[in-house]
Amino acid sequence: MVMEEQQEKKPEFGRQTSEATRNILFGKYEMGRVLGQGTFAKVFFGKQLKTGESVAIKVLNKDQVKKEGLMEQIKREISVMGLVRHPNVVELKEVMATKGKIFVVMEYVRGGELFAKVAKGKVKEDIARKYFQQLISVIDYCHSRGVSHRDLKPENLLLDESENLKVSDFGLSALPEQLRHDGMLHTQCGTPAYVAPEVLRKRGYDGSKADIWSCGVILYVLLAGFLPFQDENIMKMYRKVFRAEYEFPPWFSTDTKRLISKLLVADPDKRITIPEIMRTPWFKKGFTRPIPISTEELSPEKSPPPSPTEEGAIIKPPLKPSPKFFNAFEFISSMASGFDLSSMFENKRKAGSMFTSKSSASSIMAKLETVVKGLKFQITKVKDFKMKMQGVEEGRKGKLSVTAEVFEVAPGVAIVELSKSAGDSLEYAKFCQEDVRPALKDIVWSWQGDNYNCNNKDQPHQLQQLQLHQQQEIN
Figure 1 (cartoon, rainbow, N blue to C red):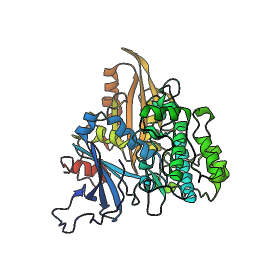
Figure 2: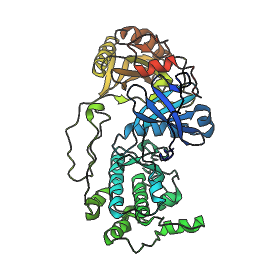
Figure 3: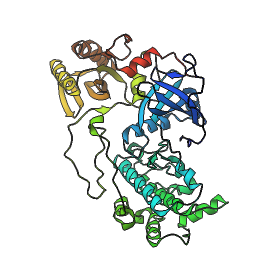
Figure 4: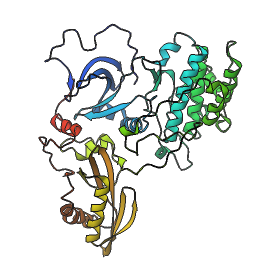
């Protein structure tokens, strides 16, 4: 879902909007006109009430998402947008929900789609170079985070008010866990005119190499004003893609033809790589690296590292470890009493017990270690914010083995998950409820399933709003 170009002279919230008719979301955002609409979602223009900042709010209907079978796709898109924090990626601000709808609040990109520019014809070489430089930089960053976009095309590239590129729509993106035993991706997806030949062949492919092909098609389109592979007969078009059969318009410069010839190579193993692209004279001309997002705004886990493939990248010493980020949907599903999204997003985690804490991750780990030793459990492995422990006594199904892991939810809030690795389930339940729970009472904020006190001012604002408005439906 992408946002349309702001061409109409429409008021964002209506000329005669009264306080009573204002569409206020969770007391934080005012929702205005529709920017775009799909089969199961709408994107609205919005405004942050406190700061006045413009945002785009994607509203998804839970029942329609389930019906379309797009649960995993939505979950993955949210996870990826939280992972790839880059100046040239549409920023994910927060995710909120009611029982029937999910609200994804994103950066509002005013310039519309790059496609709108291409539809008017070719662009000048210097402009195409700028867009291509930004595209390659951000895709390089995504690949360094293990993310392949898999649907790169001008419709999914937006422009801000400064004419800078913003990559959007990570719904078809792939993460490392989607690789099969052969280390390859096998899902055939994307837009045919921009998809790499190896994706169409259904034999497995490297997502990062496929993205590079798509970047080559985009560069060609920017400079030519039309596609390199096109035919009214889709099978004839596929044959052209398989053979990398295309022609250069006469106005293409020698350097651009040389680069595109290395991008649109049918054999992915012979296709140019991103480090090689960045070393070409054509690419390096006037190249300015994106200003990195301030690490003060992110935890070390989420802070974007310098790209290892960019020339001159400064590799900084490893930052102090921090707990993993707990997906917003999993948090809402697991912790919000009476507000269950688990039927929508199947949790692949082993069944376990969870609690939230306002203590720091390191103090939680220290407390867990003390409690475990007091219960005569052996700590078999500790790595970052994950601890494995095993009982010394033989139970009905051998020794009980439990894993504890700390996740970051929001600044000053952590969630701790206990899961059984081996042993008897009844013994595990007794361990959690009778042994661990009382021993951790001084660091526990709330256990999974316990009722929340919505008047508690110490609760994180987002969860407090979720609880207060869980019955609210936004029309």
